[in-house]
Image (tube, rainbow, N blue to C red; front, side, top):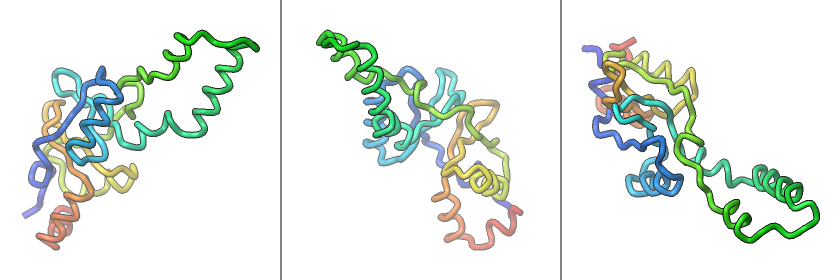
Length: 159
């Protein structure tokens, strides 16, 4: 019997909304011990993916140098107003600002082989699963490995 996405997916998918703050997204990832989360609209349409790496990117050295350069340009040799500095220091970005889009998704009836091909071809770690355009699950590389451990012939049957 060949397996499809609905057979192996995690159904209780943690999501965030596009307007969620970076701090809230970080809390969701931490609380649920996951490394990425789909960003969904009110109707559970997947509009982006947001990973730990996406959250860390704005705080890296390269972006710090860019911020420093802009602060120097804005200051033009004078001190910047404390209120402006406080504003710059606060990260007001939202999930929509850091998410990766468009998202590679698969239908709930996609074969396991197709899911594996998507993971490998796009070098991604998880694929949101949709039915009628709405998120119904997610298949991660760990899900595929779990299936292989339980049913070593699973990928052969779905190829």
